[in-house]
Length: 87
Image (cartoon, rainbow, N blue to C red; front, side, top):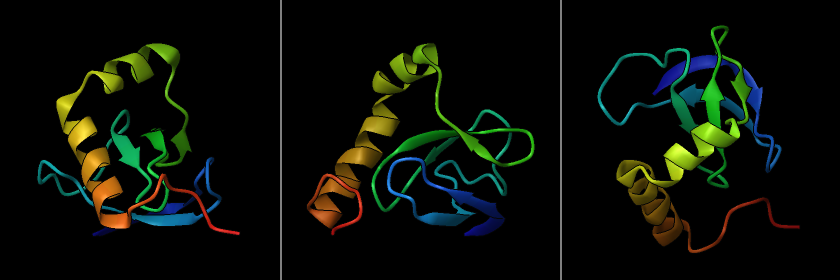
């Protein structure tokens, strides 16, 4: 896992400060996808490594990406929930 500047997940509020790449790259780049391991929220890295929500067009493409869907399925199988912090 690589350290990245701290971000806050927009969906669950978890502090995110690390990233691992599925395809083996060393570091995330602008435009790369981030999936919160805690809740499954999808975000996009910006040039300064902060995260933003995907645009509608990006989200539609992500919904059709089999790699993204498989990662979300595996996350769900491992955690057995739909994400988010428990009260």
